[in-house]
Length: 441
Image 1 (tube, rainbow, N blue to C red):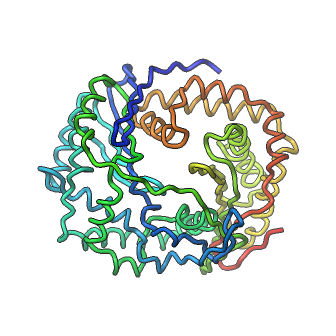
Image 2 (tube, rainbow, N blue to C red):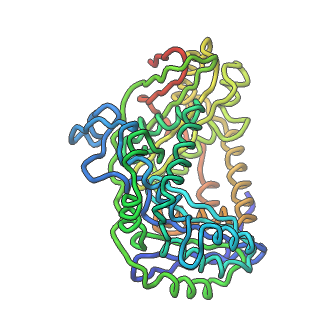
Image 3 (cartoon, one colour):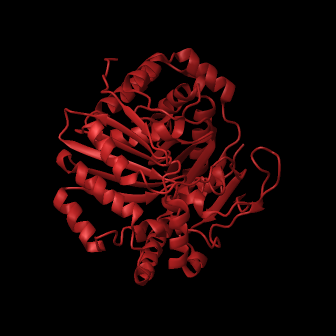
């Protein structure tokens, strides 16, 4: 694997809790930022109201949890609604002004809420990065949150909900995520009929005031930038903003067993999930190599042995999900009802028996794919800014490309085999959408 050289990363910690991470990429003509603030889905949930789908025993076996119903949660969608409202005017800008000024500067911006954070991101020509920081400061610090537009914002979330309900794969994966990680880690961010009625502009303003702050926040900037100048500007823009305590995501309450969502359909959608280790664990990349051999690319085992050789399904994959302190693997297969049970059986067999016949060629192909991804990341300021933010948030530092490359290159076939023998998943959480439920052994 050829060596990929990084430019230096600078990390600055402000007194109010904001961490600034910068990496110049002088060979690019673009720049990008990713800002993470503690206004994610976990912040929707009042403490003490976490739970599983069926009230099962907590993951640490210490206590029972109450049953959680995503369709009656009065807080569901609050983080997403706040995201939408924050964009409807800020500081000197109206909602239309924000769109116009970003378009004039060539800024492609987005806002979204995930489990632990709310993410503000932007990609742009390098000469626009200073202006982009000023707009970002207005957006997150001085949003208008206009009360006369909250119903319009709720209608957008309602339309997203209805589109999701009409798409069986989306419906499946939302239910699978909740079954695997419980509430709050498995929350989807969607509204429900109850929350559409209960959420108000007062809810949004209270959520914003409680969760949009620098405590535990971070801002990653990459591309053709001057790290010293941009860091100084960010300190001026955000250094006097309020701090706070982000809500930690420390527990997960999964739901064991199989779940079936009935649908009169000519297709059966299968979701499967099992526990795993998080990014930052000493064995993470060894585990990730095993999942890569299973499901990275068209030469991977699931694609080749389940789809191509047997013709059991039209789509099959598995991928890792990582939080601070815990992780999981989630996967999907789409097929016909007549072949659904065999598809599930063969897929789980391939996962359980991965270590039986591993080959060096499989591991080498996976390493080559990772190398390709690292090279492509060096051509994208947006991808690199996202990686900087993810590393800093998950492990408290940025892993250099050289360090990551070395860690990947050092993985041996024996390590993958030994890890999988010691941690072969035996307990799967299964969710199906289709005419008939399936069985697991």
